[in-house]
Length: 177
Image (cartoon, rainbow, N blue to C red; front, side, top):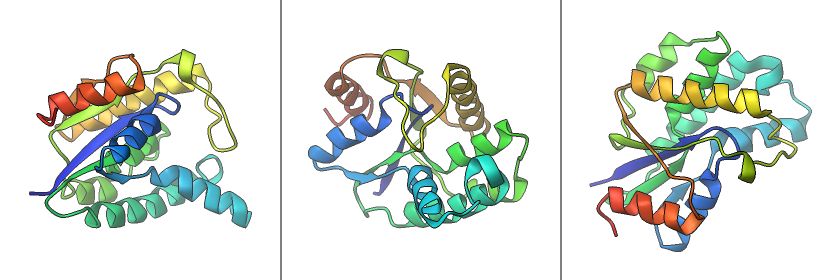
């Protein structure tokens, strides 16, 4: 049976590090689509970035996330650096709720337990596509909790430990350790 497990959280909370370690263990990994889309659009000089045209960015991101969802490795655990609800939570946070996408997203079910990495200032770092400050990080964290609860997922906070301990925590919760 194909399992789709979401690891979510505000920017800079250690998601990618966890996913890189899971990939080294042989698990199927699906990278964050928003980050790739932003970098692509910046290279093109496009306005299709969330700080210029968040509504259309969200629609394009949804299409790509849905494709990523449908391309899961069959009969395996698939780990996602953010799920479709993340995008919808960001849109809601910015007052751009898209009910049509939310309805469509309800058909894209992930594993019932979603792993949330909490804000952790000590590991946060900015770069060309990650510019959020502490206050925005906290707002995003709250928006992500809200959207996953809206879709009925059980949210499990990943403890602030070493990356390897965080991976072991997730695997243990999934019965894979």
